[in-house]
Image (tube, rainbow, N blue to C red; front, side, top):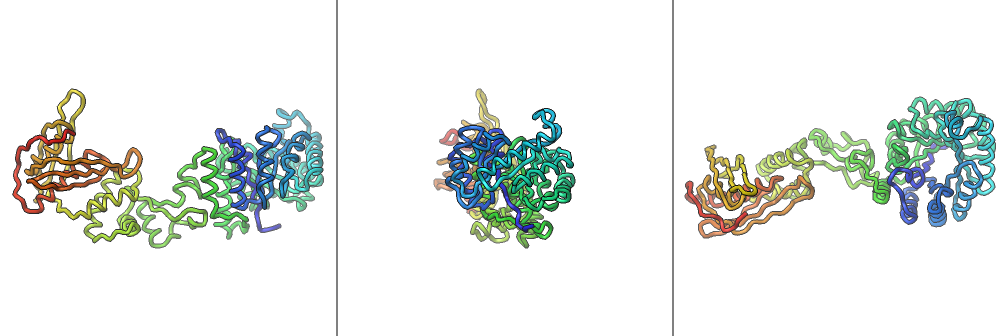
Length: 518
């Protein structure tokens, strides 16, 4: 036996059977070419007899994709095999994949045939396919629910008939690892001519065990694994190619087998299949998911920064990810935050880092994920180095149709004195700024007010810029928050603090209405 596991990709055949995953001919050819770059051994391009579109897809792939075996699926009937052979005429390495159900439930309720008839049809189908190609694969459909004694007879008969590969499908995802491995071991022990053919496995994920079953079968002696990109396929899908391949690579110490797959192409292939089929990859999907190499826990981030292998068993670059991603959120620690600041090219003092981290935690309590743009906005505020003489403790806004806009603020002054004020305005922002004026004793006249979204999404941070005229001079203020009202108040206070920091006298005053109605 070789130490190389053959990777048989059926994304374009079984994968396309996933509801909503229909592909046109051009898209199938695109995926096939990417699979060739990935270096799969066999591409099952389709089921030629099923439709003219499928026939043409297999024909185009056979004609245009080189360096890989191209297979066409066929039932054990002559018209199916004829169609597959015709579609594969231009293939560099053509394979006809013949299948016939063997389980008792299929014999009784679908085929209405006895065991002897099944064996005869299987042998006849393999023999007929060999008239066209040298490489014939046979699958006893629903093999995992077929009586082992009968399965042994079928496998032995088709190998005698000339099948070079015999696939043992877990068609309905019924098997569990120990059970499935026992089937493979049983065939290796009881089929007299087993060494004349490659034993393949094809697992479905109905119980979430497709990859586990495939790997158990490899350990038991299977030499080919049939799988799909992103695990797409009929019902709950198939064994995910990327998971099988990376399990064999990462745990080579245990399995002792390798593949020819160029693993750095896994992400590109996953994204192409996801884009063209419209089937999104779940964020926490192993290997290719967005979160596969992302860390949010502060403890994990600290470990990763010190030594990547503390919390990662694979290198992200090995599968096509750019790098490990430290996701900054409410669980992140100061170490990861400080590291990201450095990566963004900023140099902050310890005091500035402390203030920025405090604001970061405040924002993180409101957002699921903090993006680089959010961090830069937070850093920008801290780098302005304006003494926080007045600090916003809380605010309230009341506004709406047929109501007078009212705002209340609670402001902390240096020395921990608290001032509360509530006032009306021409709009909620006007009322808010007037309440701040009353609380700080510094009268401002709003000259400019701008809002922009720092990042996308409903929980995006808003950045507010204001220009405020105070004592005949214009002062700028800026602040960020997921709450745009809060950001407005903080931006206005930022301008007020610039005035207060110059030791200008201030006392509570009643101010004129702002010239802007917000």
